[in-house]
Amino acid sequence: MEARAGISKQDIREQIWDYMESQNLADFPRPVHHRIPNFKGAPRAAEHLPRLQAFKMARTIKVNPDAPQKNARFFVLDSQKTLLVPTPRLRTGLFNKITPPPGASKDVLRKCATSQGVRNHSVPVGLDSRVLVDLVVVGSVAVSEKGWRIGKGEGYADLEYAMMVSMGAVSQGTPVVTIVHDCQVVDIPEALLEDHDLTVDYILTPTRVITTGCARPKPAGIIWSKISCEMMGRIPILRSLRSREKQAGKDVTLQDEHQHLPEPHSQHTAPPGTVRRPRDPPPQESGPVQAGDVPSNTVYVGNLPRDTRVSELKRALRGRGAAPLRLTWQGLQHRAFLHYQDPAAAQQAVSCLQGLHLGANTLSVALARQQTASDLVGSCAREPHPDHCPTI
Image 1 (cartoon, helix red, strand yellow):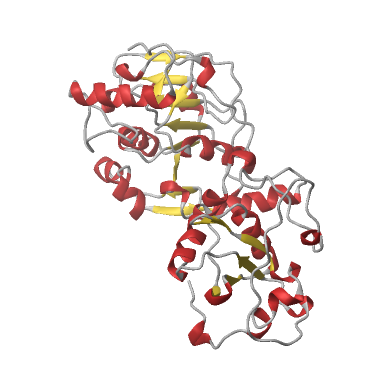
Image 2: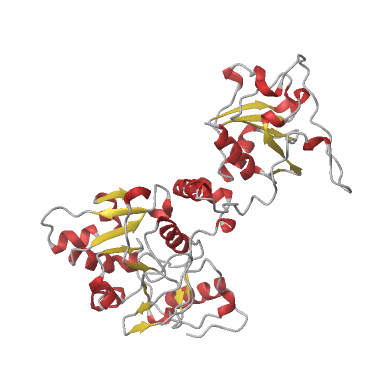
């Protein structure tokens, strides 16, 4: 198949998915749209894998968990090599090591290679395991003979590889293999490639083995500027890796963190040409409150729309990956206070919530300690009874 001129990655994906369905090349699960497509002939394509010199030399092999790579996982186990499979959507970590029962027969190994077997016969591999991966097998929606690859659009294979680089598990010399149907080998315009895109060294199809000779560098690590706060919230291991790289002095600024947090007194001045937002109306209660009395793990959220429900705010916080341990709701004052596990978690939440909108309002978000005493009267320093503190 040839890609049209002026085409996008998504155009190529749709073209492949539509063709595989219309020509009945797809296999269960169907339809293959929005998936790494399984295809008729996948077992035959996987048979090339054990013949690769890179496979013969490898001791530890990472294979993605999608259906078309089931036979690749079996061949790794049958060859008595260590099989690592990424956790689905990276929700609980990066890898699981597949551990078949002692003396497992080929039939048992085939069951271990299925998605159910991966769940039943695996142990997690932590960041401190010092694992070295000798060969990587990934799924693709489309791939070119030059080694340029397009996944299903969620970026997990690219991110998994970048995370392995950050862990020291792979290097630029670690071979990458993909297993696809012949129709998935297409021309991909180089202009579509980005720095985080993973390239492949070998393409296995039912009819041939393609050695790409790809010279384009693979990702050199996690590109934090492409990681959103929402993704950080969904993938806990990213937070651990980010903390490590921050301690190592690397720039770990996230996609959403384009603005620096305000200094404690920056709210008293505004850049020329800007319109200052009126302060949130003070509550009816009175009494002196010192900002220093406010816990440092508390985040102030102001400028809430008048008709906002607490459930709407909770949903917005979860969407940004910034759900607190507890939420103090003060709807009459158009604000809320978010209580996190520690000051570092509160600081990260402030970063993640910058620019958050509810309705037509852009919410005001800062560490509660950075607010003036008048902002805090009757609020965080004197919290309502727990019955009036909705929690997430």
